Image 1 (cartoon, rainbow, N blue to C red):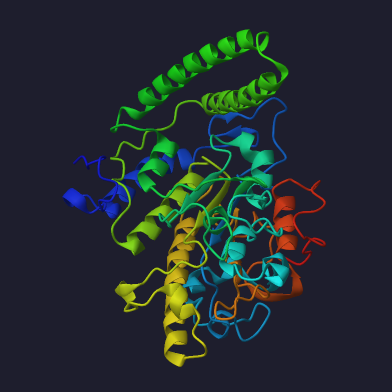
Image 2 (image 1 turned 30 degrees about the vertical axis):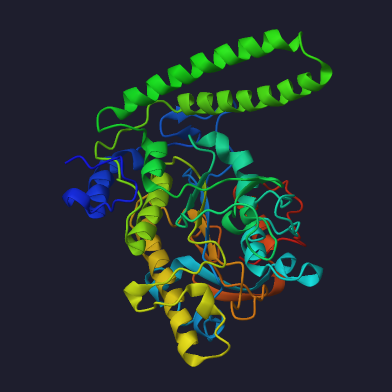
Length: 468
């Protein structure tokens, strides 16, 4: 049965078509390409660009190595988050109980800080800083219009490994409330709603609509039409680009020096589009999953979050990308959770002022987020990768927030879980306290495993974490 593609707000349950039907059909169709024989140097049947096997984003077995960064808002209740004992014989705290089935493939990392998210002379704005600093590690410029952040670690990695997949990176969000101008205490809203940054002034705007994510992964149109539609769109794009390039070259000899600089900047953007088209073409036709496209954003938030996690899992399973971010909500989110009996806004009750009832409610929200993450990890554990290991084994997934204690807006000892074994390079199944080190030290260590050993510094990093 075909679902409507004209009403993004419809739930996937509309017209009797549920997310379960959608994913069941998709899983069956995508199992074969996910398990095809992929020797080092090939990416789902497409040879890596000249030079043979790549040193980037690949495990020792030749399987893809993936990295993802998942952000949740408003910190956590520390007493419910942290285990009571360190080492491998640790007991998960109440908040992270949903990760029990993955405990042997995760690390709970304490003692990681983002000092550049603290107020200092900048005063208020901890939510904007908590989000904007999370993957950049730099001090934000406090302004509604003069945006200055820093490139995020996911984009540092994508610039090196993005050539290996159809999509250099994938940015997702479950926060479809977007604002402009000033948000938190005079900081630009761009800081508060974006964790991924291509440069100090350019955020990588995440996609909030699962229908558009699906079409980006597998093409648009009805089942059986997507491959042809994709080829036609590429042909049309090439025709437009050829016209634009030829016209722009003719203009170069007829404009003044100031306009020539503007024209050169414009042509750089055009060439970037051309490069992306060439990259997509290099990987050949996208396999059509032969099921209906999701209708849009589900009305139930749990369904929405689960579906976006499933889009991320599919992107990794099909090797569509090896670098991704997922923002569950920007810091300061005031979403209520009536499905678990919490009518108050998350941000409002995160300032609990040691009120036991409020603390219990915030801990319940933290647990809700952990349950969704636990289901995602279970899914990755159940997907066999090309080397016989699970996709989770061959991944490195950071799950955390930019505030530690939401009540006090602290940014030291951030709540962070590192899931996945990194293809066998990580010390999984433990709780370790790093002893007050920049979180960017962790990012350097992950970048090393993705093949970027030449990166000496990132953000406020001081060294690598040698013990992950």
